[in-house]
Length: 111
Length: 111
DNA sequence: TTGGTTAATCGTATATTTGCGATATAAAAT
DNA sequence: ATTTTATATCGCAAATATACGATTAACCAA
Picture 1 (tube, helix red, strand yellow):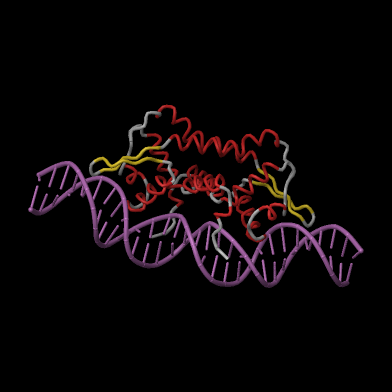
Picture 2 (tube, chains in turn green, brown, orange, cyan):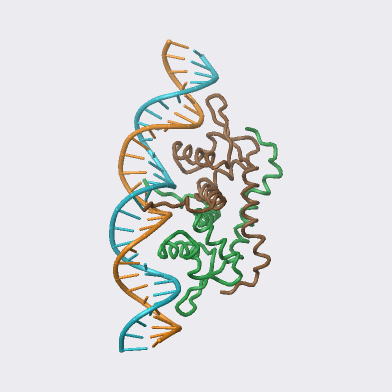
């Protein structure tokens, strides 16, 4: 008996969950906030702003990148990150499709 | 040195992260999908649909309820759940505020 | 009251996440 | 060439999350 059975769910369900998981930590929300506000891409400035060690921030950045929420390019000895708005749009669309549309017809809840 | 330092982040950041965490599992996405589709509230029907044991589903329901995403009422020996649309609206609004608005001014990314 | 049904909770095993220091890597500056 | 700067990665410890079976609780039906 397997312990984690995420595979048992649909592709879409897993995708949405993955997306949500990437957002499921205040540090990553904070990173995205910084990236969204700074018009130019940020690198180690993030480390200065966050109350975390450099290695920890690097790890969070990696997770965000793996989830596709941000892009990163190496710029000399520095790394430059920015938000992948397309990914956010996709997430938003799927999310809306799942819930917002249904909301209209179901407004009168039962409980 | 504390290991989890979520407290070091802002209230809003923590709230958004909590919200996202509640969605960060395909089983919970699936549960919400079921609740959104069934106009009347569901109880153990969810268990039949999901590939998980009853106790596990119950645990996921509890997490969703704790996060405020669903409401639940006891109806005799059964439990009735439904989506808390207001909570979703709030999440959507905060999420949009953080990212979507900023997107407009930042469309031309750098990386 | 007894028995059956439904769902929550407890206990437990395992997996994953979080965080940090230390180290490695790679380019820039001296 | 050596040193400094900026980041990524490794290895580890601690905290959380996931999943299940067993048990409990609460209600309904005979």
